[in-house]
Amino acid sequence: MKTLRACVAVLASLLAGCTTIEPARLPDTLAATLRGQEVGIVIQGPSTFGVMRERDVPLGPVGIPLMAAQGEHLRKAANIGDPAGDIATTLADLLAGRHGASILPARGATPHDEPEAIVAAAPAGSRYVLTVATVSWGLGRVPVRGAAYSVTYVARARLIDARTQAVIAEGGCLQAPDGSEHESTAYADFTDQNAMLIKTELAARVDRCIHFIRRDMLGL
Image 1 (cartoon, rainbow, N blue to C red):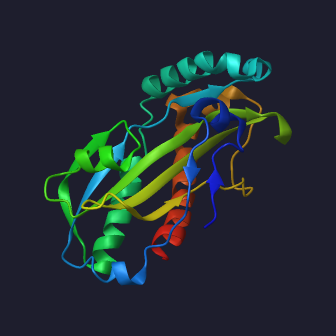
Image 2 (image 1 turned 90 degrees about the horizontal axis):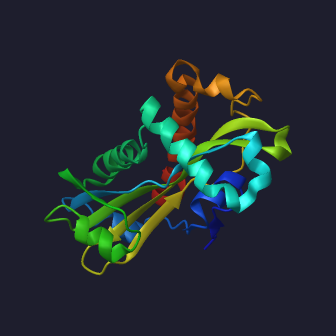
């Protein structure tokens, strides 16, 4: 099993630490048993939306509080929403459409990462629990790419057996830049017009994230 570490991006390292993503495809034998089974959705609390500006780079870990504060201020002022819920909706639709699972309408939420806490937060009657977490997100100035700003996003999704609390499928989206990212050395390009460019880039990163989660977790 390949283990991915969310430490390659400077912004992810400083604001989210190291989160292990262990891709595990849903076994065909288990996929066949999902038909008619009730799946509850739990959204884990997102990591801090961080902003790393040019002045912050030399600070390293010492600048974490500043980067977190300015990122959260921007997120709230521009109403930048956590995409984890949308990712969960897409994955739930696939579980229902491809495997016949019954998705419970109510959703749970938890700030915790442990399967036990996630199952405890799941809607009543959940046989399986689909959980999605925004692991790292923000706007960073990356010195190794011409000191240009770009939007980053990392998520993790898991399908958990509510009875055994075992993770039976997992996927994430820790991938290197593919060249489709918008990059600019001007911070204002991203924050103008109520952070419209950040929202546009975040949506693009989320679409790419869903592609990898579908592939690695559901084999689709």
